[in-house]
Image (tube, rainbow, N blue to C red):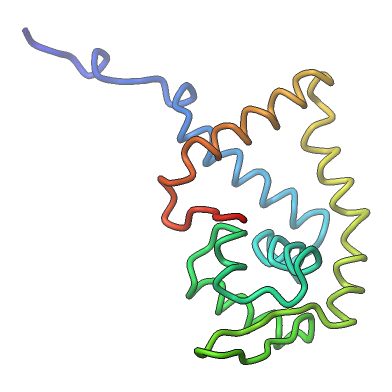
Length: 155
């Protein structure tokens, strides 16, 4: 049986991977519109985790945010250079990370922008659609966590 290209094709905008990639592009763009370019979404995630877990070691931080260790180390160096975090050497060449006073102030300055960002992302959806979207994204991430090159690990 001979197949044609149309027999093999799948509508691009029905492919979850493509839609997730586009959603990520849009989310990053909206993040920068609200918060500027001084911080990236990943740096923000690191700062938020350090707010919740001051003094966390760098490897555990990577596990909690879903980053590989080398990326986390690079982000930590950048945030330290900005004066937003401090890294302290622990045993076995591990590092403890904490927000500085400046980092705490910067993170606090992001709060209203994050609220606006979340609103912009979700306001066009009905209330039940918003909670469904968040619930389904959380479920997807949880179910497929081990497929990531940097799975999230928690206590």
